[in-house]
Image 1 (tube, rainbow, N blue to C red):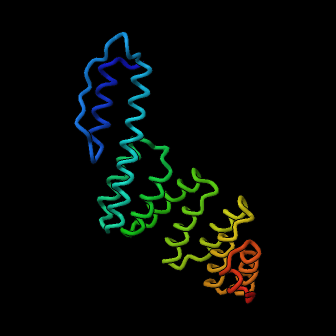
Image 2 (image 1 turned 90 degrees about the vertical axis):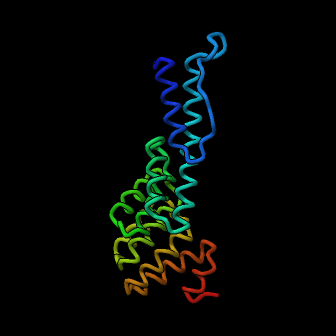
Image 3 (image 1 turned 30 degrees about the vertical axis):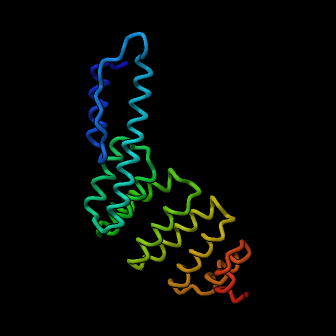
Length: 194
């Protein structure tokens, strides 16, 4: 277990990384009130708060079109909480917007592994690869998702679009039909059913 001085220094570093850092002092705790493990729990809670603040700042910077700043905030968030899958997803989107496709795909793939069942990372891959006309990879991405979530009408609809762009019209209509049966109205329109 770290000694109190080391824990206090860790806390100072966490606050130094927070964009909206509060003014906080870290005095020595009264020996009878705070056990070292309680202090560690508090530091971890502060690290979560700091990482969430950095994540929000990174998203705001990306939405404002300031991609290098967004990437910097999100990288700092990931240094604090490397298990934060949403930060990988958001940083991947920022990398993609700044033209760093391979970095974007690495981050989005990591987010997809952590956020199984969540469409957002797959939609990001679709967007990133679709801009480059890499439809076979987009189709493989959606096929991978559908192997784990075979009832996702939205995934069938997105794969249908990619199949159509690839020129595989029959397969596209079949996926649109599956999307329609899963309750996706656009799937019904794409398959010819109304």
